Length: 199
Image (cartoon, rainbow, N blue to C red; front, side, top):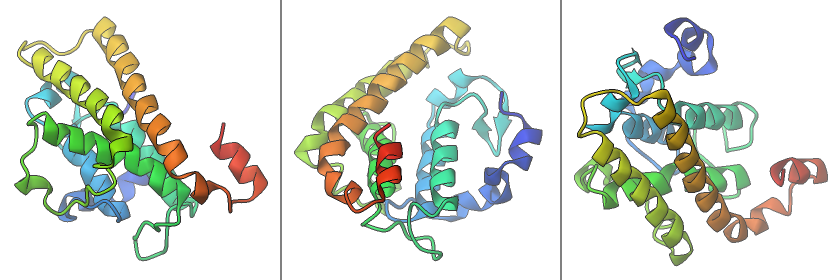
């Protein structure tokens, strides 16, 4: 359970207050964290995750896990340089794109964000035909949450379980599309790292 105390002690707690100052961006570490923040704040969906919040975002939102993973990738040197840019040669960066920018593109498709709100984001990769099925799956997911948000009550435990299952479907759809696209970025990595990446 995410609480104000354990969040404060986490790596995210060291800089999250600065995330809203950064424009949404696909090729920048803080820009991608800003995307996750945007997705967690989507109205009217955010209210179904309950009243508990950190930095104005619901503590029970599943995208906190994605944000923590991105943070770990950055701290372990798997994304890019010290200036905050995500390298185009980073396999981790490319795969994370499919779990960050593709869901944002789907939120745009679903009408949850406006074109103006995301004008700073490069959607070129997300618009590739190879991501069409994953993007459509994320659209179905967002629309199911839009429908659920018409009810005033937060998600029940059973609904949270079903939501996690749908998130996993979207997650795997993104990765299934991304793996063959970015295989060439994986091959230069050391053998142990490749084995780690391939699970």
